[in-house]
Length: 136
Image (cartoon, rainbow, N blue to C red; front, top):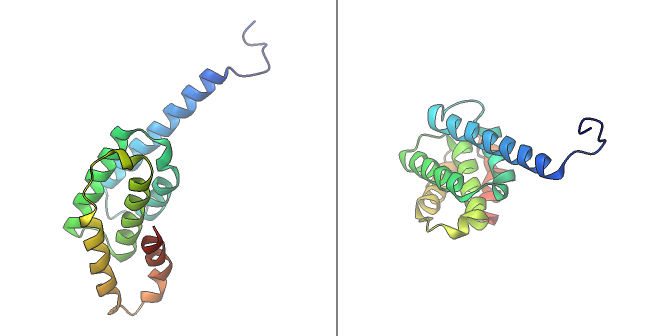
């Protein structure tokens, strides 16, 4: 009888969507931890920034810790650092408001990147990412 129903159970649909989103963010966090210099980093950070408002505080806290460590250690390149800073600023404006996260590492990282960009020959390529960080 249940199989013949044309409409899906909304609670089951929501549960599946929630689980899919959780698994996606766990993959994102795993990639950030294990392969911070991967070519997939930029799309991962874009995806996180786009959907971070949908995740729970535990994942936000893990994301914050990972990105803070990587920014302080200087692991990312210029573009990835700008994306990571933008991602964290978006996160801290959304679900991260509840967390007591020190934003100074990201602000200092942004100022260091601005200083570093003035000496880069390809600085025009990073302008859009820099503007996104500043506007956030």
